[in-house]
Length: 180
Image (cartoon, rainbow, N blue to C red; front, side):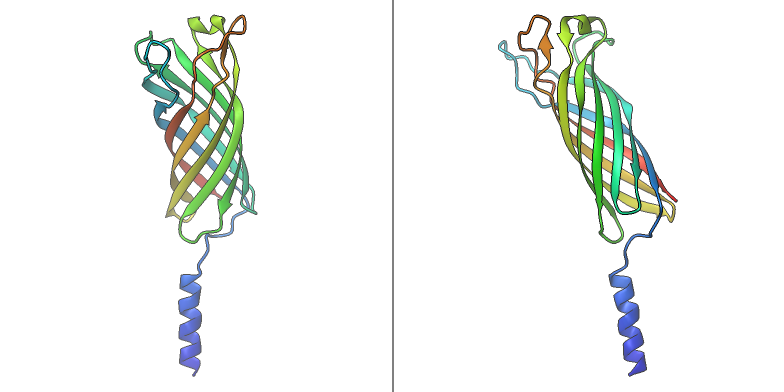
C-alpha cells in the first residue's frame, strides 16, 4: 500500500508540476517581423514592410501580473529608409498558470505616427494592441519566448484633420526572460 501511495504521489507531482515560483521576472525582446494589415488606399496601394527595429521590455510580479513597454519602428517599402512608422506601447499582461511553458496574454495602449521627414504632415494617432507570448525554459532561471502582437492604429490624421492611412500591423518577436 505504501508503494502505491508513494507512486501516486510521485506521478501526481510530476504531472501537476507548475513553473517555479520566482519573485520577479524581467524580459527583453526584439521584433523580427512585421506586416501592415490595413486596407489598400483609394489607388489600390497597400503599405508593405521593409524591416523593423526596436525592443519589448517586461517586468512580471510574483502573482503572474506584469507591466511592459514596446517601442519599435517599421520601415515602409518603397519610401526612403528614413520613412518609418514609430509605435510606442504600454502593456498589462498576465502569465497563465500552465506547467512547463510560459503562456502570456496581454493588452496595450499607446500611439503610432510616421517618423522621419514625412512626420511633419501627420498628427500622432492612438494605437491599441493585444498580444500573446509563449516561453520555453532553457535553464532554470532563463526562458526563451516567441511573441505575436496585433496592433490597431486607424486614426493617424493628416495635419488639418483629414483621415490618414491605416497603420495597423502584426509583429512577431523573440526574447529572453530572467527569473529571480
